[in-house]
Image 1 (tube, rainbow, N blue to C red):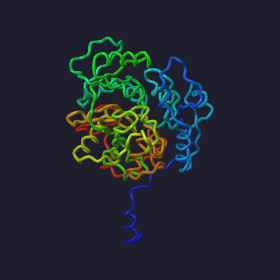
Image 2 (cartoon, one colour):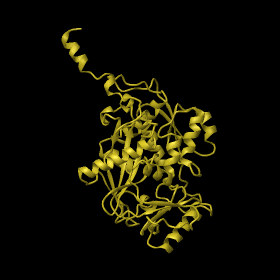
Image 3 (tube, rainbow, N blue to C red):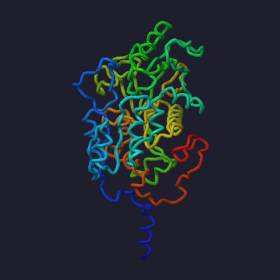
Image 4 (cartoon, one colour):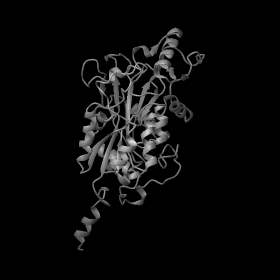
Length: 398
């Protein structure tokens, strides 16, 4: 090999992006909204609001198939174990919300773990904890992350803690997608508080979470990656050296939505850009210092709960302009042009297809379906207990 050829060899990256040995059979697992099926009398009016439309499933399948994979959709209902046995997928792309219970978003990951089937997204414990907003806040608070003062009501007649001052915000402790949240979620006195808490407990069959109302601006922040992302990503250039991509911050302006000042399920259901919908501003128009704070908090929120590969964290400012963590979504919506994470990815120049394939391949790499990229050792992250806010092995809690 002459000197010129040797120079060209040295200019090449250490290896190409990791590729599967063959196309995969990918099962997309989800719960689907049923348009014409009437709701039973004992469920809340927004039951199933976090389920997906079949159109979203078709978009996901089309995106995954752009890289040569074969896909199928399996409804995540009580027949799922038998359907998986028949389908024999190589990996599951999981966006299933579960079928009730206090940890329903963990049901499908638990089943897949038991059946030893690879899947995308966070694992069992993280999905169970993240749906429980009270438990999540306790973990964050105990690790000195900022949350608004809060209290969980199991019966409705518990004395209000002295640090909680009106106005307060009341919502179900274990729901997502703004379920149980409307204009009446803000309460201004004891009578309104007791009425709303009783409504939530009886209607949603779960505790009510009460917290100090935060009147400031609201943001949501998406994150991709984990400590060893650079070994497996199709796009290592997206990520920082710690293996994480902090997507552009999205501001949710609900001041002119159908529920002014409240990012409710009704507001979320409005098509982007239509009358009554919140305004989605991405990137958010905020100063660099607030940007840094919000990115740091969402990263810490993600790592502390052991989230894997993708999450979206909601943050709101208090009356003094200080950011407070609201909740984390470890199964963020993936409807193109509509879901918050997709809007943020698009603002970063990431196509819908690349976003979906990235989530697929990061999930696959955890189960040995992808070979690691051969990169110089200094770029690899050691699997040690994290320090100074750096992630460890993706499962430990810093």
